[in-house]
Amino acid sequence: RAIRGTSIEYDDSGALFIADSDEGSITRIKLDNSQQKTLLSGIQSLGDFAYDWMSKNFYFIDEKFPTIEVFKLDQNFNIKSRMVLIGK
Image (cartoon, rainbow, N blue to C red; front, side, top):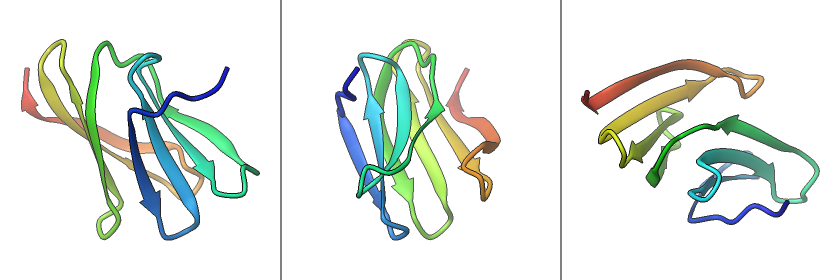
């Protein structure tokens, strides 16, 4: 299945981070299409998404609950930490 990006962010490592609201997922994909990895899935109602390249934090809105959450990845692109910033 092709990724339907509703929000896209760029990383200086040559990768795109794509939020797919239809699937409720955030995926990392290299610009040369060599690597693709789903970082987060199962988000009920994925709203906007932002990547802070300075802190390497990812922010997203789950419109169902409603919450603003943040997560950070380790060097292997696995979630290192995740927490709710605003909301329930």
